[in-house]
Amino acid sequence: MAGPCSARLQGDVSAFASALRTLVNNPQFSDVMFVVGPEQQKVFAHRCVLACRCQAFRGMLAQVPVGSQDSSSSVPAQGPFILGNVQPEVFLAVIEFLYTNSVTLNNHIALEVLTSSVEYGLQDLCKLCVKFIKDTLSVEQVCEALQAVVRTQGFRELSDVVLARVLRSDRLAVDELDLVQAVREWAHVSSAVLERPVPEVAALPVRELRLPLLAPSELVTLESHNQRDLLIPVESIAAAWRAHALRKGSGVPSRLCRPRRGTRPRDHHRHLEPHTK
View 1 (spheres, rainbow, N blue to C red):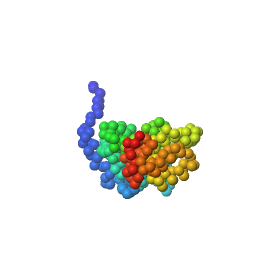
View 2: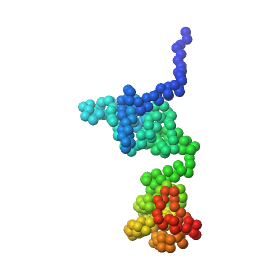
View 3: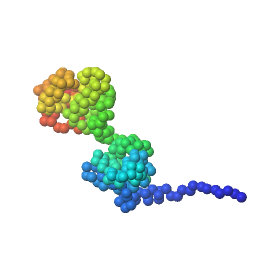
View 4: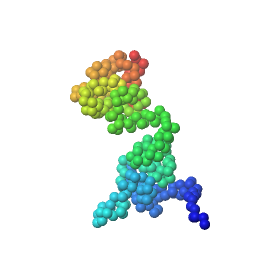
């Protein structure tokens, strides 16, 4: 007599994904809520989906509710969970992936969704983001990425050679005054880590700062800060003052007189001669 046989049969995957997509941010039958972004947008979800798809959410949702008398209770917290530093569109992209294993991306959120995928340990989402960024990469995206990187811890961990290369770009969407401050913070971190003086570790990147672009009042402040850490050689500051006095970039390399993409306009910029050698 033949024994019982079994087989795993699969129905229409697309229909299943479409059905789950209807549950994305759907308050009906939801049992957990997130309050996302500065506008405090409400996002609804289902604990069972989040928990089975993401270890990070499983840990978050498995907390014992405040005031519970049973410390061994398996009842998860209801929320709402406050996520003030995440843009709603970015968080919803993560939720979409958890429900459907697909994600809708655009150039405005791809980098942030990539960051969130790393934070939540979603390797497949991370790969999708990387593929999208590689396929759609443009000069504008690179500049936006660099603008964001300037404000991160990762920026402070760049080597002096890499930082100098970044600072050579005309397309940085960052004002020169902000770049000077970013380099100063980078230099102090590098000085502490390498146990070397600030002027020594910063010598290469500082050569790429475009000091003639700064206004006179900004140069005065720069000189005051420079007295404390000697970040910038006196000769470089003197050359910037000379550019102001002569109303042209005389004696200053032409690259240091070119406004970047993110340079805020100053009155004296019209006097600089971008082709001066």
